[in-house]
Length: 111
Image 1 (cartoon, rainbow, N blue to C red):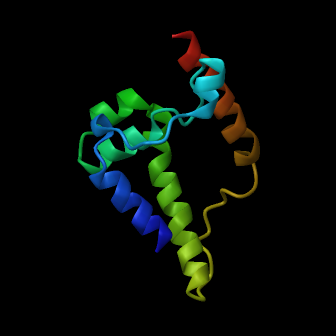
Image 2 (spheres, one colour; image 1 turned 120 degrees about the vertical axis):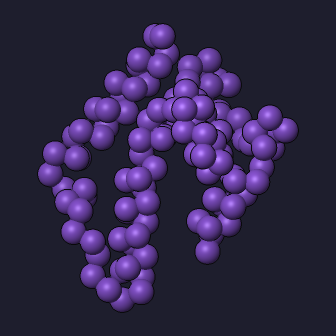
């Protein structure tokens, strides 16, 4: 229920009108973190503007299907069904995801 409420708020809240929280990391350091622009990108995706969303935060756009899959798996568990067999919680993902996040942070602050 909370996730549906949050997604609904992101869908209706226009980023141009304000109302989105500011990034503490960006305020303190001047650097963009991995999630900077993620809420605006999600807003754009929910309105079907994938190109604009990708320009705001490509990692967030690419991560949305993965997050939806993880949410669906957890929802199944909550409803008493077995989790989806995604293989995400073990194996090379434990190294790939942190490495990709660090590379993304470095590249977005260089360019």
